[in-house]
Image (cartoon, rainbow over the protein chains, first blue to last red):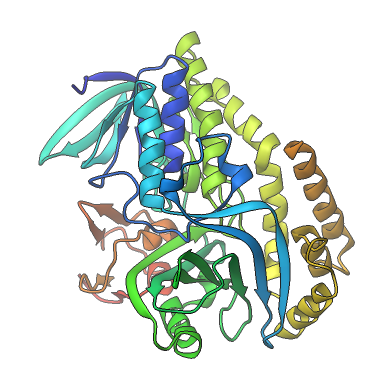
Length: 397
Length: 57
């Protein structure tokens, strides 16, 4: 039975929403999570790649939502050369539909209420303060009161805008994407592959992530400011015609990925934003699942603490962005500073980097080596790269 | 601005880049409020399937 009042209302039941709801509920808050779709995890607007180390703190690994185990990454340069890199630990390609449901179930097990087909329409204000959420459920407009609204409503987030936060991304800071899930193709089932080049994929990359024997997610993300005349679908279809002319396309999905630094303001009195809604995405890789879960855990715990101590001011809730900044926000900022260098480089330069990387043995080749080579000649960025990777190493330990 | 709903996948990419808060996703449809629209064409440029064009809805 859905109540009229909760401590926390979470909008969106993706990984960000589910993890935030779970940690808020686990720490004593009453929580309602609203999902616009008919279930968590659909439609799957995602390439589905994650690292074992990234998701393991949040959920017991279950074969039901692992499509493929990944050992290596293959980077393809514009001139067709390939550099192979061993993953830093195991990687997975997920079945997001099942994975998201599992995360959502964890929130419900901890006591969160969950409502699907519930479309959030606006915030409810009382005496100039955010006091609840207006939503549409089965044709009826409903209101639920709460002390904290937690917006986990994705790249198309409206929650922040309702609260007066400027959340719009510039065209440079969004990737416009298309992905096909294809079958009947020959792929390396243990490798995630990446293709770069200004001709095939300006300002982004094309990926092949295996999902099953002869089945893969093949997608493209290109920088929003370079997509006006020729959209990502045209580029992807050109790639498909060359690489997989006989593929069967089983699933097509479109979407946008924030490639910015974290939004400057992610809390306000009675309000928090997490995940894509807060632009918590690695701006170079476009990976957002683990980032969202890490942020959501902090947000959920801070929300529960706010409920316990009855402190809902922006000043108190700022514990969340502060901790996020320490954990990952700063690294994201460094990645953002490197984004243009890395994804905006000339094909010639990229060819050189891949041929340089080919000389490094795969077991010693790492993202650090790649980025260090990419920012060579820019001492400030080189220092940033070194710092970012030292920090992430320490945190893994 | 005008949306071709036959093409639109309701992915919300246009919403994310709208500086005028003129686009919403609701009930599995994208709607552009032409009174708020400032015709910057961000949505049109970023739409992955080019479902948006200039013109009244």
